Image (cartoon, rainbow, N blue to C red; front, side, top):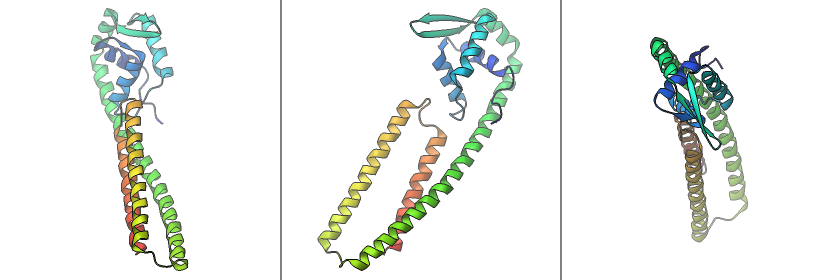
Length: 207
């Protein structure tokens, strides 16, 4: 993947983030992730060495409380930022272009995953149809009570699936940095639509 930031750009952008107020490392990482709409999440190994360098240059100061270190921009850092406002505007334009590029890459990855998923679902559905046809040929017609029991079992499966997916979504939203981003939402919508389409197709073929 091409570099997200040009040489020296991340250093200046970190100063811009700290201009809004002091932040600890996790808040800085999350602010960057939010700026990129969840398409890019910098690692701690990318951020902390640059913050340490900014501190060594006198552009950033730190304050430690327990295991947490808070970073603040210094007067020298503000002067550097003011002097390079033009460069910062260029970085913002580059970030917007990077977000579009990363989003395009994610969409293509999602489309590729969906093609594989559709093939897997189609194969599973065909196997289920074969099993159902064989079962119909070897068993007497079901009674009304038997049909109701099967329908109830299937409705229970659908209800459990719905509850499981809802629980997974809430867990992901609570644990992921930035919550559920656009790429995750698009993937979930596509998978659910494909599942619904496959179920309808299977039911129509089994009539």
